[in-house]
Image 1 (cartoon, rainbow, N blue to C red):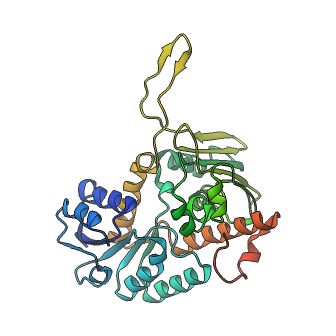
Image 2 (spheres, rainbow, N blue to C red; image 1 turned 60 degrees about the vertical axis):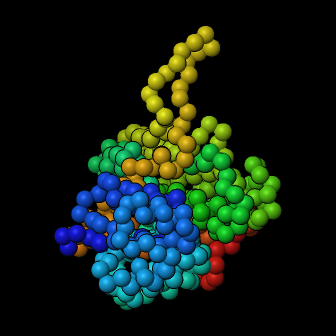
Image 3 (cartoon, one colour; image 1 turned 180 degrees about the vertical axis):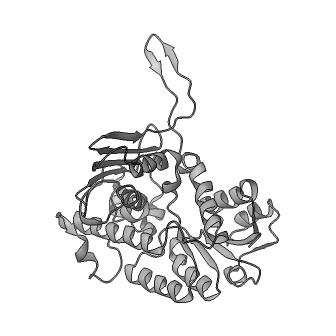
Length: 344
């Protein structure tokens, strides 16, 4: 393929990021169709001269010139769009999760496998330059044998309760990125999950059936342990940190801040705030994940993050939900035989 021709489904926050990135920063690819239900989203696509801008998903999924589709629409549409794209023979890039039901995810992945089309799940944090540097250090043996990993993920403010009600809950909506990062960094599989969850920020989140604060302990089959801390609100800005400790040393990635200037006065030294949210914190990682998707397509290589990765992160999330509900450690083997949707 000389030029990869893309279609985008959904032009909310993440769809707009991907569309702008592709149209302004990535070579060898062209967006020829975009779908969004609202006029506002379609107007955004018009700014970039997209040939077909529509509110009809099928017009994009079955467009004869399209090689691949980016599914950036609401979660409850992901599975249906993935299945339709697979039947249409399109390569697929899908935001997490494929569905809130593990059974539905498994069924969808089987259809994708039968159709023999590429599928990449959008866990963009793997492509963050700082996190990638730590991964490179681990692979190079700089840390020796890994012992423990600490992942901190705190949002600057909670989303609307209306969003939380349909998000699948904290662990599937937010922590799922950390579950994937843990598997990526440790390069092994989780065998046990022990989680605690609380409502410390907004009682309305609890009324909606979710938590806003979580602590999770993951035990891996190579005896590495990972501690993850989540919060829906950090007054000082978006907080995303990673620390890895091993027999030969430790590596950590701190938060980038708005600039490198320090102000000094009689009260001391003052640094700028953290970045505001994921849109500015992970700008480069969003670009790199799309580049990785396009590179794999052009070179007919396996996708760097596949459907199985998405499924495994969801299984960990379900184990965490059960752990909070039943106040006990949960073996991953238990989840492999439990049918149905993610509890929240």
